[in-house]
Each structure stands twice: as structure tokens, then as C-alpha cells.
Image (tube, rainbow, N blue to C red; front, side):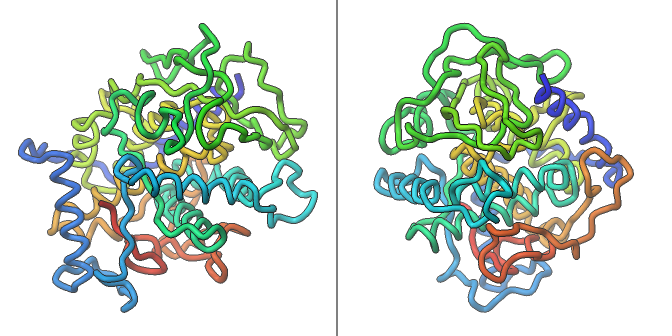
Amino acid sequence: MAGIAVFKALVASLSLFSSASASPFTQRQDTLTLDGVQKQALANAYKVLDGTLSDGLTRSAKCNKDTVAVRKEFGDLTKEERKAYTTAVNCLLKAPSKLPAGQYPGAKSRYEDFVVVHMNMTPTVHATANFMHWHRYYIWAYETALRTECGYKGYQPYWNWAKYTDLVNSPIFNGDEWSMGGNGDPIGPHAGMSLWPGETLPGGPGGGCISKGPFTNLTIRLGPLAPTMDPKLNIPPNPRADGYGDNPRCHRRDVSNFFTERYLRPQDLLFHITINKAIGTFQDTLQTNATNSLSALHIGGHFSIWGDPGGDVYVSPAEPAFWLHHGQLDRHWWMWAMYQEKEVKSRTSMYEGGTHWSIPNSPRGKPTDQQELDVVAPPGMNHIASKEFFSTTSGPLCYVYA
């Protein structure tokens, strides 16, 4: 399957970008807990905001303890807050696209503008120096669109990977009106996929079209470009080789507890945060690790949802739960950078890696590299340097995680 080949190529490529950090390991801090890391990171973030701790960056006077936005875990939101969020997402799904007419036939909605941008940027924003930074920019732009274009009053929620062992029945995927929709309908036995040597993701309890929750009638149009589901499901190919053709089909999920029971546990996230001293190894092992017991945390989140389009590296933002997963990815990085007071300044400005996932000797990324969001950038906020996204409370950003 073409999608699995792309996935394996991404896995293989990641080790090429970690040479800048030859000794990533530090002694494990057994007295720490994951909740403790979160609390320390938040406390240090507020110290940065009140000026008693420096992260080495210049901060706008507009970002302070009174104005900073607080992003929360989806399950910690009230039912009313969850409903307000999914209502705003459905607003973007109904609003017209702002892309040039006819250039991307499958992009009918404002929401699909975000999918096209991700498709265009995929090779330069995965397994590269700007993996974390570009996605931080991208999520912020999405949050901004929800607020400015759809009247959303809250902020982008995240999915704490370690919170729900039973992800299938979690508040995120249980299918009630306050969730992100249910699992795909059961379709019986279906093939899984090889993740890395010695590990296979089995077919989950879903796999079919989603018939419960606020995104029941969602039509997927872009892609597939790198499909990973069982070919016997006969998901139609896109009429264009680049995946931008109009290919209407149902929204599928195959949510399972495979990763949450094995690899996305609190101790796994804590180990990953505490073992890496530099961002090069932090982001490489976050995306994949095929050499020891660490999970591919980034991939594990995506393939806990799986389905079509969730299992397609290019088109995955067409899955509304993508944004909760990448919100957690951003939080995980924020926790790593902020939890040790003496390391805040050095970790905040770390930037390592190449600039293209399939070119081993691609030019090294620079903090001044311009990041692009095209039509999904907030007005006047396209082509912003990576260094503007070093911190969640500097540059154009002003938020923390609770």
C-alpha cells in the first residue's frame, strides 16, 4: 500500500536528523510524575510572564498573567464548552473556501483550506527542524479562525494521551453530543498495518463510517494520498495523483486502545520528557523510535484514531480530532521546555534538524526561516520566522496549558 510505504519512509528518515545531539540521555528523575511536570511547567510559565524568570525572549506587554489564554484538556471542559468547540468546527466545515477557485477541487470549505495547506507543507514540516514550530503556528492559526470567523469564545483544547486507557469510550470518542464524535461503525475483521520491526497495529473495533456525534454527516473530499487502511475496504482513490481532486466519501475512524494501553501511558510520556536534553533527539524520538521501548508518540496518537483520513500523513487534518492530538503534541514540547527552571532559557530557543524529510543532506534549519500558512494564516501573519514560535508567550502567541 502506498500510504504504508510513505509512513515507513518517514520512520526511516527521522534518525537522519539527530546527529546534532550526540548525548541525549540524562538520569531519570524518579521523584517526578507527569502531573508534577505539568504543574512545574505552568508555574515557570507564570514566572516568565511576571518577569521573575527569563526565557531569553522579548515579550509583548500585551501578554501577561491577566491576558494569557489557557488551553485545557478536552475532557476537562464542561459539556457546554465542548459543544461550543464542535459547533465552531462545524462552522468552519460549512464556510466557503478562500483558496483560488478550481486549483484544489476537493477543497470546498474553509476547514478544507487547512487540509490543503498541510498537504502542501507535509514534506518540509515533518522530520525537520520546524516540525514542532510549524505545527504550533498551524494550530494557533486554526484556533484563531475558530474565534474570529466562527465566534468561538474558548481556546484550542488538547487530548492528554495518557489520560484515557479506554480511549474508545472516552469523552473524546464516546459518540455523545458533547464528544468529537464516535468511532467508525464496526465492519468486522480487517487488516492492520506493520508499524516498525516487531510491532503491528491490528485492525480496531471500528473501521466504518461514523454514525454518532457532532460530525456524523462529515464528507471527506481531499485525498487519500497516503492511505493506510485495509485495501479491501475499497476506499475510492482520488481522481488526481496529487490528492487534491474532489473525492466525496464518508468519514471513517478505527479508534482503538492499542497505543493507550501500551505506549501512551503516563510513565512513557514522563520518560520521554526527562530523557532528552536537546530538541533534536526530543523531536526525533517523539515522532518515532524503532530501537528501544519508547513508542512513536506522535504516530501513536494519529494511529489511535486511524481511519480515513486520520491515517493519512498528508490529509490527517481532515480528521477533526487531529487538532486535539497536535494540541497535546505542542503541550508535550511546552512541558519539556518549561518544567526545569534552570533549563527554560536554553531549551526554549533550541532549533535542530534539516528542512526536507526525504533529503538526508537538506540544508539545516535556521531560527530565521520563514514559515508559511498561505490562506489560513491570520491576517498579516503569514511568513513568520520560526523563532517567533519558540515560546507560547512570545511573538504573536500568548497561551499556556492547564
